[in-house]
Image (cartoon, rainbow, N blue to C red):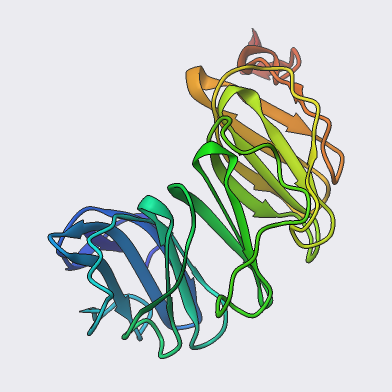
Length: 245
């Protein structure tokens, strides 16, 4: 199911139903692309050229039958999707026709783009990157040890600094567009599933069992924030009564 809201989420419509479950969406201008589980031999990718009002399934896909886990619009016409069994797909015609320029060794769970640089991360600490908008892919110079835990999300904090998070609380950072990676301090062994950055040095990582981690450094040393202690004691005067929050 694809849902479209034009009132900031107050209501929505279903302009299109893709062939199978959808796992990721990205947009750039009027171009919106979704990617998901394969239906038989065909990878599921759909696109809209008018900001989500009208949709069409991709005209051609490689037909390897892999589930796609993430999608990133790199330029106005170039889109890259990553997924199961390391499959990487690339389109240069606004997501209509797709080719498979590279296949990684393990499942790829997430990707991120900064200008023409792409980084994809996945199972067994897999990290691959492209510096030509997905046309070719290379391994980083010093990746984290292969055969370990899974990496579940990756994000550019700046045009050159990237952060990857994964199972068992693992966090890695790179300050050179994903070539050299360094393990960061983590205070949890929970699986970390997603990372977000607000643009002013606050990085938030979330994971299993409600774990929320915060760093106020651009390349984080992570500290835990228990949910109940995020807000300090505040006294509010309401009418004639004093309420403690």
